[in-house]
Image 1 (tube, helix red, strand yellow):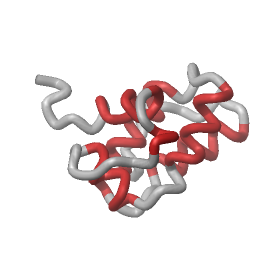
Image 2 (image 1 turned 135 degrees about the vertical axis):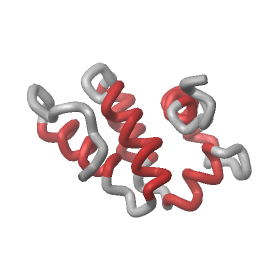
Image 3 (image 1 turned 135 degrees about the horizontal axis):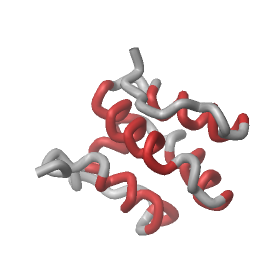
Image 4 (image 1 turned 90 degrees about the vertical axis):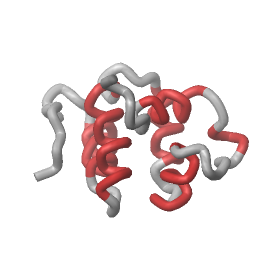
Length: 96
């Protein structure tokens, strides 16, 4: 079970692959953060944002999780924009 709440129907092949990869990271924490982000946003991302998400998911789970938690910084190319949006899905108090 992936946890996804979104069907890949209606997505192009590139977005379908990204949706799958966001839910199958290797650590459950990053599956939840990136998977929930992808469920909510994958259909509306611009092509530039799809490019950025593809680059972002090439980073290790350890590096991404540390950056989401504010314990480490990602390379400058990821500052702002899409990564900031992803971070909101990693906040533990999001539903509070």
